[in-house]
Amino acid sequence: MRLQAITAKPVKQYKSYCFTGQTDPNIFRRLILIKDVKKYFAYNFNRRPISTSKEPNMQQVFTKAMARNIFLGGSVFFLAIYLALTYDTWQQIPLRDHADKMTPAVLSGKYLFDTNNCVGCHTLNGEGAYFAPELGNVYKRRGPEFIKAWIQSQPTGVPGRRQMPNFHFDQKELNDLVAYMEWLSHIDTNNWPPNIQG
Image 1: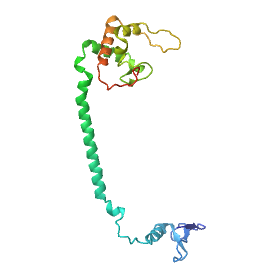
Image 2: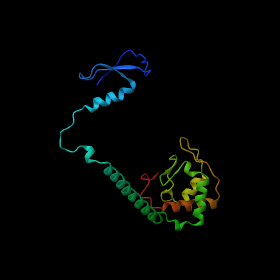
Image 3: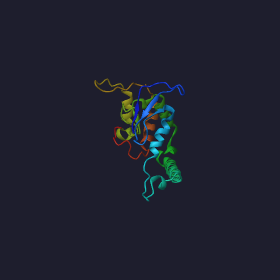
Image 4: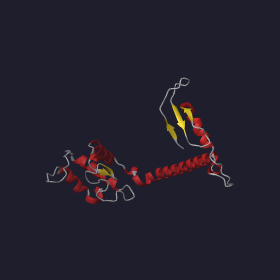
């Protein structure tokens, strides 16, 4: 189908541009106003041969009602799965986080950890800045005495090594931080992160 444009000339009656159409030998060459273009295309498209096949087409097989039912059924199905997984997650959390074992020392250590933005450099159970080692398993990896000595010795000043600032914690605060690290080490994270150093 081709629509040839000719020199645009205003028509007094419609004050529009004129075109000439030459697509069908049975249609006389004539001027078509812009407002008649839709009718022109509709005429040519409607002249397509009608299929004589007795096989049902896609529109007859897949109806709007079927599409609606598939959409609603799929939405309900996946919503049910989402709710079931959410319920299972909330059932598993108390068995994994051991919140009942949070002592005042653990809470104080968590407060120190949060207020000093330790997660701004370290990771905790795989979440954090990935600038410094993982702390969720540091209690098992290093032990309590090493943790306290390491915090007190910062910054080490070793060339080429990332440096941690000295927070000037007293002995009670160090013990509270270690208690918090010990509590973290008992959380069941399904072996996450896979790299022991985080």
